[in-house]
Image (tube, rainbow, N blue to C red; front, side):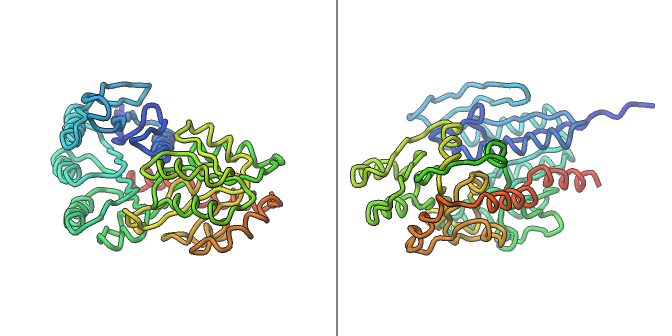
Length: 376
């Protein structure tokens, strides 16, 4: 009897080599993709897996005009011409060439461009591979974006499994319900490491609050730093990250000595800071993006930390998330009251939070569901 050959899987994505964020790419996107990759390898254990992607960099002239290829185990980072416009076409060419040369059975995608949707749809009809698409964000800032997205999602609807991050994506673009699995994200290696360090230990929380992420208005950094300047709470504010608002943050440091800025740092530095912080911010506003089509994946890291989780009432929050976080009023009127109770934080509530995460924010369970559907 002829032995059945193993299925070939490729994951097309973008990772800062090896999973560290940089000024061109958010660390949270790395964490999510690495978690997806880990669980694909675990659930599809009898298949041959490869990651074929690129390491994002700022475009030339800010960095090199040509980015060389690198590899580490199953992770292959292909080379590309790093000029805006040419880069996107070169990456598409690399992916098409990989498909034709390697003939994968399953293709996993982390987000997708208009041209990728077009060409992958055509190649799927010719070569017969199956496509699983994780829709983590949709960029739609104007009428042209709307028109392109409307056409793009018609191509995408022909794929086998779609994993959108919000119900709004399904509803707005009429994605086929029978192919769609709504999943807002889950815990990553970063979150599990924090949980393991905290769950059965007495953590002494310090009077500091952490803001870690892109320094952009859509993340609320302007509101946070202005609150510290105007209200001068007793707690220190520790800021980690980089972004377009970074220069404003630096300008305002001398207006309140309790504001500390650390810039872009490795993930383990942020983890150490969050281990004993009284609270951590996770904010989202529709400024330069449409929050109907996004969801802050870092919320699962923050919910894994022992301190309180400070959020605003952004879109797509589940009841479980609301129950396990502290929701700030529009102008942070209740922030000082929340901070004053954070030092006496109950460990019982932390354990309840972790239990909720394990049940509702689990990439492994999602991957098992994908495996079951794709092989049915």
